[in-house]
Every structure is written in structure tokens, then in C-alpha cells.
Image 1 (tube, rainbow, N blue to C red):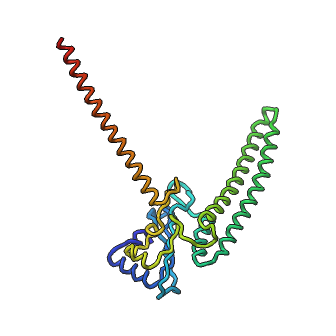
Image 2: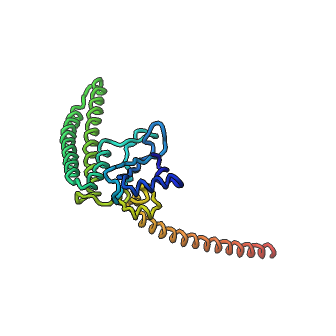
Image 3: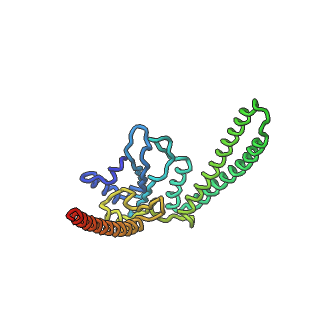
Amino acid sequence: MANSASDARNSEADIRKNLIKSGVIDCMLTLPKNMFYTVTLPATLWFFDKNNLGSEHKVLFIDARNIFRQIDRAHREFTTEQIQNIAIIVKLYRGESERLTFLLDKYKMKATEYEKQSASQNIVLKQIKKEKPVLEKEQKRWEKQVENAEKKYKNLLDKQLYFQAQTQWLTERFPNNVYEDVTGLCKAATLAEIEEQDWSLNPGRYVGVVIEEDGLTEEEFVDEMKQRHQVLSSLNTKAKDFENLIEQNLRLLEKDYAKLEGI
């Protein structure tokens, strides 16, 4: 559904409140923008589980807005591995720790496989470069061989680094192979916590925010912005003082110049 449904008011809010209280809502997943070809509206996936009816369980919130592969300027998608990474969060939340171990082993095996292939291709590339032709008429053919070998090597190396990055992404967030709330990614919220948020089902309200560029949490970011604002205010004050000083000096110069003209 569109993101607006997670926070809509009036009758929609009542429907959402009753759904939450019934226990049927299992997980909420916010998608990145531009995931659909026909609409540009950001969307949230709602997962229901009727087995939870009548129970006061938690709702798992996952914010996947920063997880995507850019296809072109206007479109994004999930890679197979990104889908698996998101799914493993739910598996861990349900206590299926062995699923993460299996997935990490799979990624490591893939990374090792591509590492061997890229190393082998690098040897081939170096050998081709050594065989640079003497005759000018063979130069273009040799350059094409080098270009193709470099592309193949880069492609294999990119795949190796990609699977290493997937392993790192998971181990950094779930180092103990068990579910835990991760700032900016996921949060298992209680009924009381959801009620405090006016029965909102917007994952962004629960998972918090991590500023990806510097790794700061929302609170740390606010504190840093306050400090920078204080520094900026101080600099503005000094700038004003200098401006007044310059203006005073100009007036003195004008008076001195007027006296000189009167002589």
C-alpha cells in the first residue's frame, strides 16, 4: 500500500488500530522510492498472519529505503541477495538463527569462488599484456584482447567484492547470529510502543535514523547539528563585530578626508 496508509487519520486510523489490536499484523516493510514502473509513489508492504489473532505480540518494522540497486535514473530494484538479507531479518526474529549461518556460508563460498576466478583471470591479463605485438597491424587486435580481458577481470572482481559486502552487511548488523533491533533498519515494537505513536505503522517512526555518510544515529546527528549551529552563531557574531568595526573606520576616514579638503 502507499506509505500514506501507514499514518492516515480518521476512519482509516480506526481500521488500522483495530488490525493492530487484533494481532493480525506481523511485519511492515518500507520500500525504496521508484520501485515500480507505473507509479512513483513510495510504498509499504503489509504482512499479515492470522495465527496471531487475539494475541498481544510485537510488530516487526523494517525500513528498507536504503537497500536497492539503481537500474537507471528513475528505477530501482532489489537484487536476489538483498531480498535474502531482508528475509533473514524476519527469520532471525522468529528464532531461526541457522538460516543466517547458512546464508553467510553461501555468500562466503561465492566470494571465494569469484576470488579464485578473478585471480586466474588476472594472470591471463598480465600474460596478454606481456605479448604486446611488434607489428603495428596486430596492435588493434592485441588492444581488443587486453580490453576484453580487463572487462572479464573487473566483472569477476566486482562479483567477489559484492558477496564480501553482503557478508559484511549481515555480520555488522547481527554479529551474534540472533535478532536484535538495529537503528535505521529494524525494530520489534510492542503494542504499547505503537500506541504511543498514535497507532502509526510507519517503520521510520520506530527504527530510528542512521546518517549513512558518517554512521551517526538520529540523536548524535541532532547533537552535532546543535554544536555546529553554536559555532555558526559565534562566527556570525564575530562577522557582525568586524562589519561594525569596518563601518566605524570608514566614518573616521571620511571625517579625516573632510578635514583635509577644508585645509
